Length: 120
Image (tube, rainbow, N blue to C red):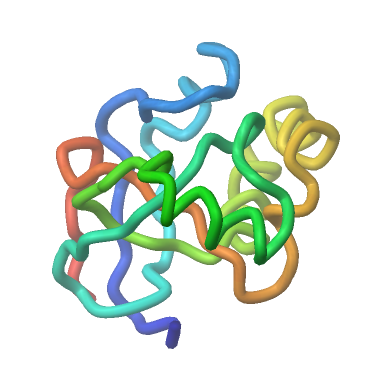
């Protein structure tokens, strides 16, 4: 996905597996989108419980274990870097518990109702 100048502000506590205190730290942050400026349809897995390999992702999709999400994709490494500026503890949680998701070009998806689009 290509990063553009459009950002989203996280306005609601994101859904997901991380502890509530970690998810709360996303609220108010502005994150650059990895793709277009409109919401997309994504298939995702839990940050902690999801498959770790490419084959595991394919298998999970085939078995219908992926969640269908209407939302916005952000590059995970960049998003956690921004998170680290306001909450080093929450960023450390991501690095310790879901570090493989922070590889280059990997994305986190925030549900559309958790975001406000900021066009620059």
